[in-house]
Image (tube, rainbow, N blue to C red; front, side, top):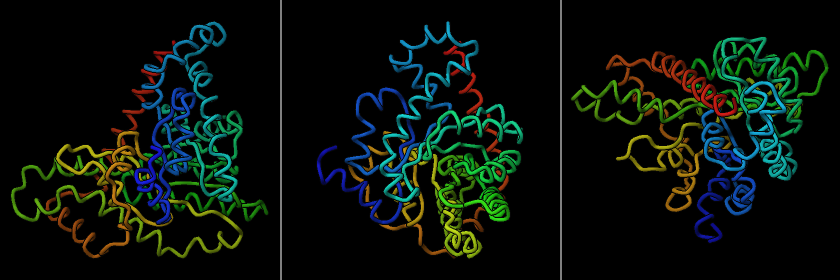
Length: 362
């Protein structure tokens, strides 16, 4: 990692205006100095976590195992024990990124932690949990993750109004992206109306990538004509590039920017390649553009450090990307329908991971 040639590949992405975040957190990552090294050597600018990540960490990290017996005595519920285990690590990660947060004027160096998955369809519960977690973590560069369900999107407006950084997650469709953008702006507008500052309130819209291609390619599997073959593996990046085009050409944020507000960034998530025959860094290389974020798991980070190519790729041929979606529609594939199914599956996956995680702390 200390080799200049190696780490320059990841730093080169930053030079193009995109932040690379790590999609992982554990006590070992912190205690070993690995996260500090990733920040120093590779220019990693933030971190995301989720219930599946913490389940694997608590299951495999000896430091968590050693702390559990005392917590079982001291705290009554598995959820309280879980938070007592991991929130100090969220705080430590925030502290490692604090210099970057300060030096970037609050535009980098964020650490995400998710509200309880059981609240996915509960607006009031999500707002209350976001406020509670924000207060407990107590770091200006923490970011509260909320799933982009209708209830979660309604909560986003309230949580932004409360001045809390938000990572809206499990976004699979254009309609979700647009609804999340609108809710973010409603929260900021209410702050302006009440003569409150809109500065240093950060938000990202986390658009999931590889899962879309897996689902779409499965639907195309039995279509043998050349147009179906040509669009396999292209749905997710076409949709992402169109979302980026819309984001770049949207003038609606100017009124908020005039008061010093930070725009809601697009964040590419689920960027590990799921198909072994595909290039292992395709969802990093293919989605590089200024003003965006890509959060990547360790293996993808290592792969890009080794052989990734840093070039701007989001500003492509918009009409070509629209043609991909038109071909999918020709084959009866509607990305809104696919995305709705993926959202339901994603919510279930995180809920099951959270239940397994709580079983570890029971």
